[in-house]
Image: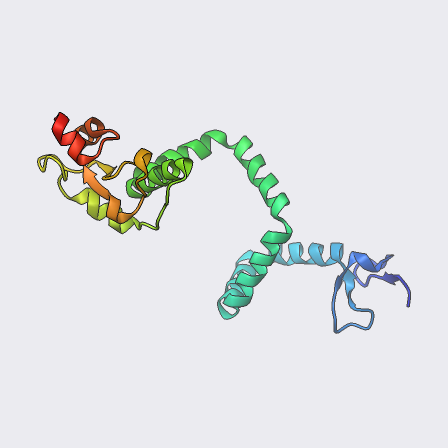
Length: 195
Protein backbone atom coordinates (compact mmCIF):
# COMPACT_ATOMS: atom_id res chain seq x y z
CA UNK A 1 0.00 0.00 0.00
CA UNK A 2 1.38 3.41 -1.02
CA UNK A 3 1.73 6.32 1.43
CA UNK A 4 0.85 8.74 -1.38
CA UNK A 5 -2.35 9.40 -3.25
CA UNK A 6 -3.40 11.79 -6.01
CA UNK A 7 -6.07 14.33 -4.98
CA UNK A 8 -9.13 14.50 -7.26
CA UNK A 9 -9.49 18.22 -6.52
CA UNK A 10 -6.05 19.63 -7.25
CA UNK A 11 -4.53 16.59 -9.01
CA UNK A 12 -1.37 16.70 -6.89
CA UNK A 13 0.08 13.55 -5.34
CA UNK A 14 0.12 13.99 -1.56
CA UNK A 15 0.92 12.08 1.60
CA UNK A 16 -2.07 10.17 3.05
CA UNK A 17 -1.84 12.33 6.18
CA UNK A 18 -3.00 15.29 4.07
CA UNK A 19 -6.38 13.61 3.46
CA UNK A 20 -9.33 13.26 5.83
CA UNK A 21 -9.93 9.78 7.23
CA UNK A 22 -12.84 7.88 5.69
CA UNK A 23 -13.50 4.26 6.70
CA UNK A 24 -15.64 3.66 3.59
CA UNK A 25 -12.81 4.43 1.15
CA UNK A 26 -10.34 1.78 -0.07
CA UNK A 27 -7.25 3.53 1.36
CA UNK A 28 -9.16 4.78 4.40
CA UNK A 29 -9.04 8.44 3.32
CA UNK A 30 -11.19 10.80 1.24
CA UNK A 31 -10.63 11.29 -2.49
CA UNK A 32 -9.81 15.01 -2.03
CA UNK A 33 -7.12 16.45 0.25
CA UNK A 34 -7.99 18.54 3.31
CA UNK A 35 -7.03 21.78 1.53
CA UNK A 36 -9.38 21.05 -1.39
CA UNK A 37 -12.23 20.03 0.93
CA UNK A 38 -11.84 23.27 2.91
CA UNK A 39 -11.60 25.35 -0.29
CA UNK A 40 -14.78 23.74 -1.66
CA UNK A 41 -16.59 24.35 1.62
CA UNK A 42 -15.59 28.05 1.57
CA UNK A 43 -16.73 28.40 -2.05
CA UNK A 44 -20.04 26.69 -1.29
CA UNK A 45 -20.62 29.02 1.68
CA UNK A 46 -19.70 32.09 -0.41
CA UNK A 47 -22.25 31.12 -3.10
CA UNK A 48 -25.18 30.80 -0.66
CA UNK A 49 -24.37 31.43 3.01
CA UNK A 50 -28.02 31.36 4.11
CA UNK A 51 -28.55 27.87 2.62
CA UNK A 52 -25.42 26.57 4.38
CA UNK A 53 -26.47 28.03 7.74
CA UNK A 54 -29.97 26.56 7.40
CA UNK A 55 -28.49 23.15 6.54
CA UNK A 56 -26.17 23.32 9.58
CA UNK A 57 -29.02 24.38 11.87
CA UNK A 58 -31.20 21.50 10.60
CA UNK A 59 -28.42 18.96 11.15
CA UNK A 60 -27.75 20.32 14.65
CA UNK A 61 -31.45 20.10 15.56
CA UNK A 62 -31.64 16.50 14.30
CA UNK A 63 -28.34 15.43 15.93
CA UNK A 64 -28.24 17.48 19.13
CA UNK A 65 -26.54 14.84 21.29
CA UNK A 66 -23.89 14.10 18.64
CA UNK A 67 -23.36 17.84 18.12
CA UNK A 68 -22.70 18.33 21.85
CA UNK A 69 -20.31 15.37 21.98
CA UNK A 70 -18.39 16.68 18.94
CA UNK A 71 -18.13 20.17 20.45
CA UNK A 72 -16.93 18.73 23.75
CA UNK A 73 -14.30 16.55 22.04
CA UNK A 74 -13.21 19.42 19.80
CA UNK A 75 -12.92 21.68 22.84
CA UNK A 76 -10.62 19.22 24.60
CA UNK A 77 -8.49 18.72 21.47
CA UNK A 78 -8.10 22.43 20.80
CA UNK A 79 -8.01 23.79 24.35
CA UNK A 80 -4.68 25.61 24.01
CA UNK A 81 -5.61 27.01 20.60
CA UNK A 82 -8.95 28.25 21.99
CA UNK A 83 -7.28 29.83 25.03
CA UNK A 84 -4.73 31.58 22.82
CA UNK A 85 -7.45 32.90 20.48
CA UNK A 86 -9.46 34.10 23.47
CA UNK A 87 -6.44 35.87 24.94
CA UNK A 88 -5.59 37.53 21.61
CA UNK A 89 -9.19 38.71 21.22
CA UNK A 90 -9.08 40.15 24.74
CA UNK A 91 -5.83 42.05 24.04
CA UNK A 92 -7.25 43.48 20.80
CA UNK A 93 -10.65 44.35 22.33
CA UNK A 94 -9.85 45.18 25.95
CA UNK A 95 -12.07 48.29 26.11
CA UNK A 96 -14.98 46.44 24.53
CA UNK A 97 -14.51 43.52 26.95
CA UNK A 98 -14.49 45.84 29.98
CA UNK A 99 -17.58 47.69 28.72
CA UNK A 100 -19.40 44.38 28.17
CA UNK A 101 -18.48 43.34 31.72
CA UNK A 102 -19.79 46.59 33.18
CA UNK A 103 -23.01 46.27 31.21
CA UNK A 104 -23.46 42.64 32.34
CA UNK A 105 -22.94 43.67 35.98
CA UNK A 106 -25.60 46.37 35.65
CA UNK A 107 -28.06 43.96 34.02
CA UNK A 108 -27.39 41.08 36.47
CA UNK A 109 -26.93 42.55 39.97
CA UNK A 110 -27.97 39.35 41.78
CA UNK A 111 -25.58 37.17 39.80
CA UNK A 112 -22.75 39.70 40.30
CA UNK A 113 -23.37 39.75 44.05
CA UNK A 114 -23.38 35.96 44.14
CA UNK A 115 -20.04 35.79 42.28
CA UNK A 116 -18.51 38.23 44.74
CA UNK A 117 -19.76 36.32 47.79
CA UNK A 118 -18.61 32.95 46.44
CA UNK A 119 -15.18 34.37 45.55
CA UNK A 120 -14.67 35.63 49.10
CA UNK A 121 -15.75 32.29 50.59
CA UNK A 122 -13.45 30.31 48.26
CA UNK A 123 -10.55 32.62 49.11
CA UNK A 124 -10.94 31.84 52.81
CA UNK A 125 -11.68 28.19 51.92
CA UNK A 126 -15.03 28.02 53.67
CA UNK A 127 -17.84 25.95 52.21
CA UNK A 128 -19.66 27.34 49.20
CA UNK A 129 -23.07 25.86 48.48
CA UNK A 130 -25.20 26.31 45.41
CA UNK A 131 -27.40 29.39 45.64
CA UNK A 132 -29.65 30.42 42.76
CA UNK A 133 -30.17 33.95 41.49
CA UNK A 134 -33.85 33.55 42.37
CA UNK A 135 -32.97 32.95 46.05
CA UNK A 136 -30.71 36.02 46.03
CA UNK A 137 -33.50 38.07 44.42
CA UNK A 138 -35.91 36.93 47.16
CA UNK A 139 -33.48 37.96 49.91
CA UNK A 140 -32.87 41.36 48.31
CA UNK A 141 -36.56 42.06 47.66
CA UNK A 142 -37.40 42.15 51.40
CA UNK A 143 -36.65 44.86 53.95
CA UNK A 144 -33.42 44.79 55.92
CA UNK A 145 -33.54 41.88 58.39
CA UNK A 146 -31.85 43.98 61.11
CA UNK A 147 -33.56 47.39 61.06
CA UNK A 148 -36.67 46.42 59.03
CA UNK A 149 -36.84 50.02 57.73
CA UNK A 150 -34.64 50.23 54.64
CA UNK A 151 -34.73 47.88 51.65
CA UNK A 152 -32.08 45.17 51.41
CA UNK A 153 -29.09 46.12 49.29
CA UNK A 154 -26.48 43.69 50.64
CA UNK A 155 -26.34 40.00 51.47
CA UNK A 156 -24.94 39.43 54.94
CA UNK A 157 -23.54 36.24 56.44
CA UNK A 158 -25.28 35.65 59.78
CA UNK A 159 -22.16 33.78 60.95
CA UNK A 160 -19.35 35.77 59.29
CA UNK A 161 -17.08 33.99 56.81
CA UNK A 162 -14.05 35.02 58.88
CA UNK A 163 -15.54 33.09 61.82
CA UNK A 164 -16.17 29.89 59.88
CA UNK A 165 -19.58 30.72 58.43
CA UNK A 166 -20.41 29.14 55.10
CA UNK A 167 -21.96 30.69 52.03
CA UNK A 168 -25.33 28.93 51.97
CA UNK A 169 -28.91 30.09 51.83
CA UNK A 170 -29.29 29.26 55.54
CA UNK A 171 -26.46 31.64 56.51
CA UNK A 172 -27.39 34.59 54.27
CA UNK A 173 -29.91 37.35 54.93
CA UNK A 174 -30.73 40.58 53.19
CA UNK A 175 -29.61 43.76 54.92
CA UNK A 176 -29.25 47.44 54.16
CA UNK A 177 -25.77 48.82 53.52
CA UNK A 178 -25.62 50.69 56.84
CA UNK A 179 -26.51 47.65 58.99
CA UNK A 180 -24.25 45.28 57.05
CA UNK A 181 -21.24 47.60 57.23
CA UNK A 182 -21.73 48.39 60.92
CA UNK A 183 -22.12 44.68 61.77
CA UNK A 184 -18.86 43.84 60.00
CA UNK A 185 -17.49 40.47 61.12
CA UNK A 186 -19.43 40.34 64.40
CA UNK A 187 -22.13 37.85 65.24
CA UNK A 188 -25.67 39.21 65.65
CA UNK A 189 -25.51 39.06 69.47
CA UNK A 190 -22.14 40.91 69.58
CA UNK A 191 -23.40 43.53 67.14
CA UNK A 192 -26.63 44.14 69.08
CA UNK A 193 -24.62 44.70 72.31
CA UNK A 194 -22.48 47.34 70.59
CA UNK A 195 -25.37 49.04 68.75
